[in-house]
Every structure is written in structure tokens, then in C-alpha cells.
Image (cartoon, rainbow over all chains, first blue to last red):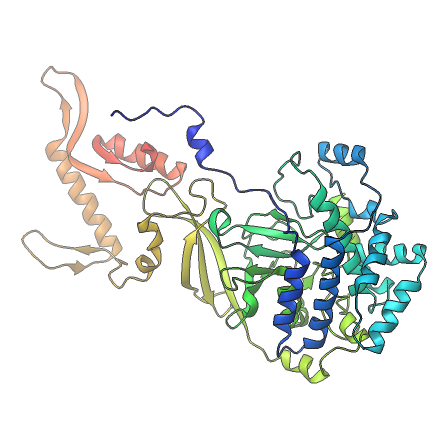
Length: 305
Length: 196
């Protein structure tokens, strides 16, 4: 039989474009908790990683049974999508009241370990009035770590992540337009926590940036600085054997870096836990004068500005 | 808006001193932070390139390692398809997938060689000698076999006794120059990237 004649458009459709967004799975926090528990074994930060495993577990509980919170403003969502603005803009929503309900729900779900410092921090957060809580949260999402007590960061950060992931998973993003070179989350406008290089199927070899707040992942071209978009002389620094599959993408133009999780090197890796388990790399890079902008909301980094 | 946000968002170093870990009494002993200083950092460079095999021009990412010094030669350790590249979306054909062996092959030709007529032995020669020789042979062949007019007396300016095969993965500019040089000599048997 004679070969069929291709119609215009047939070849283009076959060479599909990679998806712009990857949404986190519904059991995201459970996965993080599990992974943190595993990584804690024999780790120098074992106590902290175990504490965070409990924090994530409480996040999952609340995400599975969320309290009733004020619905998102549909008009604002629609207009934001239309004008290419993040529909869950962190700097706006953090000043509203809705996420405070999530914080209370999380505080109720969290079983604090018997550590006086943790108990004190939880008490402080529980007793703070909403104005103070918002002031802390505004400082945290804008990276002003010295404007809030470092002991509160992981708990406040957990509640914020929870609220934004909850919103993200109920949002209809079919109208979201793909944009190139997004250095901030297209859904909430927060900076990325890390990059993740996929290793399976259609996504094999593609890099996605992982949002520090809502955990959504968006496509970002590889071998390109995620801070200043430079493509020149990038270096990938890592310890021997790249433990946890993590390498830091270091840019000589802006002197900044972002850690990348290579799933091909750590197939069961997860970005938030991998980031926390490789702080030794950050400490060494900091010592060599490289700067990190990427927040991890479960840790106030505590270095010099 | 982007600029403001960037300046607004503080960059910082990661240390344990004022971190949440220390504030919650869970930081490792200070000796740990001290020991990190002695860990060895390795650098792996990732570089974009184009596959040299054919005119499809698939995108590649080449991984190389060196000691990190500016003038240290990098050793290529891995080559894979570039998933961001619109031509191949990360895929490679068997030849492209074997590029690493091609790069490190002991049989790889790195200098010009000549096998004289009647000999069965390859001899290494200098680039300048090779180029002179090629020019000489081309000139002789062209002088001997150039066809200025056909049987009907029409001007054709053909040189049919020599062919030319040029690089596949080359730029528009290289394709243009190759075309100008080869076609103006009268060569018809000719292939390169510019055909595609």
C-alpha cells in the first residue's frame, strides 16, 4: 500500500512540547515525611530532620482533612491568569486571614516531641495574635529572616506551605499560559527552593524549578542560571559521588547558586528533603563566597547576609 | 516588578549559628561545621553542543570534569540528548548515543595523513604540507579536466572529475562560504549542510 501523505500539523503534534507545570501529588507531605525519616538515619542533622518529618506528617493530616477556609476570590484568580500574574500571589494572600485557619489546624495536628525549645516555640506561635502572626509570615515569605525568631520558622513555614499547596491543588490552571524564563513561581510568585532534573518518560532530562511555597514545579531550560538567566560558564559543584543526587548550579555572573536534584542519581529523591539533607554543601559554598537566594521555609538559614 | 522583588528578597549564606536548627537546640557540635571546610568539592561542567554526525543537528549536553581551574583541560565523562532542544527533545540515534566512544576513540584521526599512490602505508604530514598538496592536486586536476563548453558550444564551466563532501553540523555562514568556494570552482558533485 502506498504511504499516506502527511497533513500539515501532523509532524508538529508528534514532537510534543514538555508540560510547563507539574503539580505536586496529593500525598506530597507524606512523601516528604517518609523521606526525611529515612535520611535522618546516621545523619549529622538527624534530630532536626526527624522533627521536620513530624512537621510534614501534620501537614499531610491537615491537607487530607482541611478546615473550612474562605474560598479564593474567583474574579482575582481569573484576572491574574488573564494578565500573566500569579493567581495565588504570596505577597497579597499572606496579608489576608485565610491561611491563619490553616496555621491553627496545623498546630492542632502537630504532636510536638518532648523538647523544651520546640514546646516553647509552638506555645509562642499558638499564643501570638493574628497581627503578629501575619507580620512574621510577611517577613518569612519575603526572606527577611532576621525579622522573626528562627525557632518559629519551620512551624510557620509549614503552615504557609500547607495553605498554598491546598489552594494550588484546587485551582483550575488550564488557562495558565506558558512563559519562558520564569525565575519565580507562576502560581504564587515565590522564589524556587531547588531545581529537579527528571529522569523518566516524557520528562526525562528536563529541569523543573520547585516552588518554595506552593510546591508546584515549572519548566526552566537547563544550563541556565535561575537567578540572572546567564548561560555562561555555569559550574556544577558537588561532593564526591554527589550524595542525595544534589549538585549546585553555580553562576559566576551573579555569584549565586541553586541546588539541583538529579533524579537519575537518586531515583527516590524528593527536593525538600534532599535540600535539607545536603546543607553541608550550602555551608561550604557559603564559605567560598557563593550566595543562596532559594528559601526553604522549614529552615531559617542563619548565615550572614 | 521582578527587579524589586529580587532586591527585596535577601540573599544569604547558610550557616548553623543563627539557624532554626540552633534555635531549637538541634544543631550538631561545632566541630562538624569545622570539618566541612575540609570536604573536597568536585565540579562537573554541563555544556550544550550540536551532534557532529548528520545534518539533522540534534542538541547535546556534554558533561565534563576537571579540577575546576580556568585553564585545565576538561575530561568528557558523559554525553546525552538535550531535552530542551526542539529538534530531538532529548533523544539520540544509535550513532549519537555512542558519541562518548567516538570522542575517546584511540582510532580517532587528530592530524592529516597521506597514502601515496601505489603505497599501502599511511604517513603523517604537517597541516601546511597537506593544504599545499590538496591545492596542488586540485589545480592540476582542474586544469586537466575543466569543461568550459559543451558539444554545442554553450558555456558550462564544469569540473566533473572532483567531488566535495563538507561538514554536516555547520552553521548557515559556513554553509554559505562552502557553497561559494566549491561552486565557483565548477564542482558539481557536492554535498553539505546547506543542501538541507
